[in-house]
Image 1 (tube, rainbow, N blue to C red):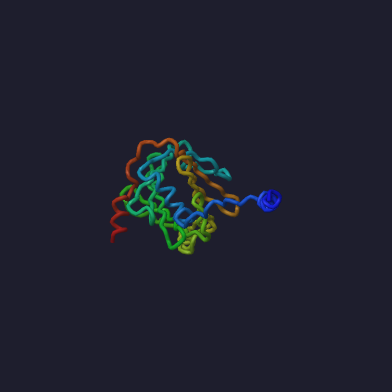
Image 2 (image 1 turned 45 degrees about the vertical axis):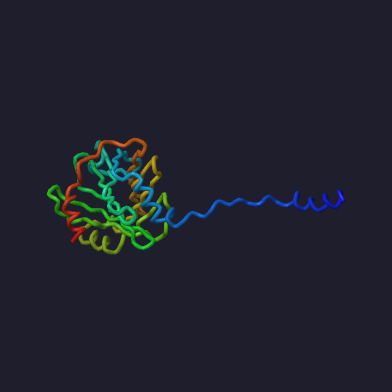
Length: 213
């Protein structure tokens, strides 16, 4: 009887351990939805940044050098669909990054305004993600509308732009511009230390009116 019991137990002892695989992340935790949700954790907060890559070096004065760089996560009325993130460069409040959910992808547009709130002649350029991306990183190749604008305004170097953003909630946020010719510009923001919220970006009221129209 004892020998029979041990014989039956032996296969169980020799069997490989059962793998306890982690459950697959839900759609809300990945891709466009996950990225917006990660960034939305900082709605209402502002953070200081620094340029961590800017190559090749420019022969003309750099508008970012020596300036206080601040991002402000606002425009959070419907964070699962859109976030607006003004990017302040010193006293220049002309720039706002607009992230919009388009199906299962994301769209990035750069809203550029003058101090009186009127749109710059080069504005609302950007692109849609071509890949699902992750909750940590999304890349936005330039779209056809932006290419046409750049060509019209004599900005031939920008027609091959790819923008990217990375977010690690509570740690860091990265904005990136790259081109195949080696151009690389990156600004990294410290999400561990919120700073005082800056004034609204130029044209904030106008942008809200246009959105509601």
